Each structure stands twice: as structure tokens, then as C-alpha cells.
Length: 45
Length: 583
Image (cartoon, rainbow over all chains, first blue to last red; front, side, top):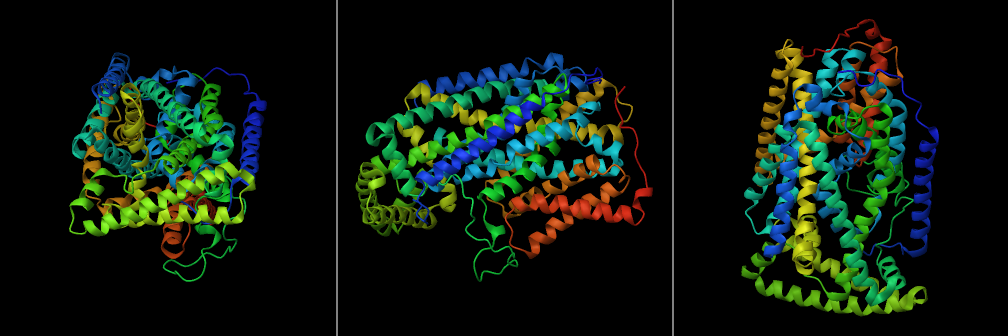
């Protein structure tokens, strides 16, 4: 019942930055992709 | 299904159950049974987190959603990576500093025992009913695929999953989830490649992109919502245009509403938090969560892309007007069959026109004339209109239900025996991997949050594990029974489940209160939680707002109520105590 009593090294902050950057880049890519190919109107079939 | 497909499917099922049950010997105390002895590696917990979220209806329903609605649903997950980072920064360190087995134990130390009990009760009630849907929804489709009675399919999923979860505890859950996730991922990749080769060999990648784009299927990012009117309409008000708050899949709902939903799901729902309590250290828990942060959005994108590719494939090769086999049989046997035949003729004509126009658009690419685009879009709309009319006239449960049969229809009609067996196993795996995690977490909340503190505070470890196994079995029975009741489409249970899902934001709110408002203590947590749930119910009853925003309303409601209560003197009422544990 003692999960982690020993101190552990700090989690590298750059991994968080990498996650955020990846997410932002992915969304930017999806934005560009949608702008390039999606034709906005009500047609769904 | 062919004999080969049944063999592949059967071997997979037998292996998963054997793998789960053989872990029963290790589960000798509560820490082993509910936290795997804190020895589970981060990658296994990470895959289990993903497998729990990927229910069978995700595989079946999301492909159908991609088929009919395009890529827009991917925006629902935009908040997830940011939620995971926030959880790693603020929630994980607190949870892993404490020797807790349920996330609600934290609330007892931080506020008081009633706050913990209420939060745990909210979790138990909402999750149990949601579990019924997690079993029923895919069982409807699987029973049609396997040509088994619906009741049999539900009982098979319920009994098999409960069986290995009872014996092996969370270790069985995690390690079976790992295998199940591998099969799910393998199945997704296989279907994507198969369909891509099928479609691209006929119209090429560029042609496919133009044909799907002009049809409105590549709407993966909607920055400007259809409405920017920020004043919500009142409940029951059908006049005027829909407000900003009523649009489900836009960039803003996904990023903000989705962020709150994912924070609550991964940070305050025992069925997910339990997985990150099984790792040796806080950093391992962080890695497990960040696996989803990297993988979830691309995975959803691929699943939706399968739906879009399937739509293109159907556009080129034709599709049935009704996907659900029994709906079609009922329509053909009905007195109305002449009208049904006429509708089918109309659908055939629309399909022919859609195919010709699709080939022309694919060939012309960006050079397609306005006239051609309009002709193609008209044909797409006509085919959809006829399908919708057929589903609402002859379908047992309308268009939404028929959409869930799009993907199963394709795999049954296309894939050879062994691959079909693998994909059916993947769908079953997705159902079982969600059910097992929830069963184990329901049992954990029952035993750790109620049985030990209120019924048997001096229970030995052996007694506590036995209680864990009994409650897992009882929850399995309740979940299977709920699923069986839901076959009748009982609106009462669906309504209760809908209301239950509204409490997510309030759960997040009480944890935010605990983590970021250290001076607010005692009964303020309990009162805040009640205030948050009341806020969501009031908004639900009075305004027209998409449910993702309820998560934000819940958090704001909890904070406002608790801070107000603390301000008028509630802060002085402290009720913290030490959690009860078996000796």
C-alpha cells in the first residue's frame, strides 16, 4: 500500500511541449487539409 | 460467417479468457486486485486506457459516422492532448502521492467522507447504466453478424467478461486489454489498407480526395461555427436559428467542451484513473496517459477515414438502401412492399447518377465545373434522402441505428474467412475491453468507498478480496440485466443514463476545487458537488445547449456554490478523516 514513497526524478517538461506541439501541428494540418479539399455545403450522402 | 472465421474468432476468445483467468492466483490482497500490486508497466496501462475508451460502438459507430457525416467527429477529440498534459501536471502527482485505490478516496482526505461517498455514488450510478449501453449497442450489431439471438450475444459478452474480471482483477483487465487493443489496432489498419487499395485503384488518391471533398466528407476542421449567436435558445423554443451552443462538432466545442469532458473522464472517472494507479511510479502514470495524448486523435482520424473510404467504395460499387438485414426483410414482407420497391428503384437511379458524377468529379479534380459539382452534390443528396426515408419508414430504429450496420455489412460482404474472424474478434474485443474495466472499477468503488468504511471496517485482506470478487460478479449481473432490459428500448433507462452523463462536469468540479482551492475544506466539497449537479440540471431543463458544454457548466456550478458556501462560513466545518483499510 505504498505506491511511491521514494522520490523520483522530475518528468521532463519537454515531453509536455512535444505533446502540445504535436497536437497544434496536427490541428493545423487538418485545417489546411479541410481548406484544400472540403467543399462546404449541406450535402451529405 | 464461414467455419474459418468462426475458428479464428473462437481461438481469440478462448485465449483472452484463459489469459485473464490465469492471473487469479496473484490477486491475494486489495492492492493486487485493484492496483495490480503497482507493478503494471506504463505501456500496458496506456494501451488499457485506450482500449477502455475504444468501445465496440466506437469501431462500429465511428466508421458509420465517417460514412454518413465525414471527418467532422474528429474535432470532438481536439481537447484530449491538452487534457492529458493538465492531468499529468496537476492531478497525477496528487493521486500518486497517496496510497489510494479509488480516486474518490482523495476527496475524503481533502473534504470529508460524505463528499467521497457522494462522488463515488454518482460514479456508480452513471457508469452502471452506461455499461448497459456499452453491451447492448454492439450486441445488436454482433447478433445480426453472427446470426445469434440478441439475448444470447448480450449474455455471452456479459458472462465471459465478468468471468475473467472476477478472477484476475485489474491485472486481468489490463493484460487482456493489451491483447484486445492489439487486435483492434490490427483490424483498423487492415480495413484501412483494404479499402484504400480498393478505392485508389479505381479513382486514384487525388480523385478520391476530390470526390469525398465535394460531397462534404472531408470537414475535419470547422473553425467558424455555423452560428455565432451566443445567446442560447430556451428549451422547447424551435423558432429562429440554432445558437453557437447547439452545434456539437466544431473546433470550439471539441477544444473547450472536449477538454473538460476528457479531464473529467481521464482524471475523475474510476474506470480510467484506476489504470494509472497500477504503475510503479508517477512518471509511469504520466507516460501511460501521454500515450493516448499522442495516439487518440490519429486513431480516430483513421477510423473515420475508413468510413469515408467505405462511402467512396459504395459510391463506386453500389450499396443497399437499408443496411440492417431484418429491416429489409420486414419491408419486403409487409403490405407496403410495392412502395418499398418503388423507393428502391428511386435509390438505384440516384446511385447510378451518383456513380457517374463521382467518376467525372474524380477525373476532373480541382478543374470540375460548377455544373458538374452541383450535379454530383444533387445526386449525393438524393441518395441520402432516399436512404433516410427508407430507414425512417421501414427501419426498426431509424437512420441512426442503420448507420451502425454500414461497417458490419461491408466486412461480411467483402472480407475472406480468417480476416473476417479477426475483425469480428476486434469488435468483440472492443466491447469486452470496455466492459471489463468498468466492472473492476465499479467493484473497487463499492468495496473501497462503501463496504470497508461503512460495513466492515475491520475486514481482513482475504475478506476484502472476496468482497471484491463478489461485487464484480454482482455488477456483471446488473450490467447484463440492464443490457437485456435495454433491448426493449426502454426510454426510462435511456433517460436516466442521459441525465447520469450530465454529472461528469460536477465530478471534475469537485476535484478542481480540491486541487486549486486549498482553503476550501469540509462540507464545501459536498455542497459544491450538489450545486454543480443542480446547475447542470437547471441548464438542461431551461436552455438548448449541446451536452459537451454541460461539463463546463458543472465545473463552474461546483466552484461557484462551494466558494459561496465557504464565504458564508462553511469553511470552518471540517470533516476530514483517515480512509478505512483492511488489516
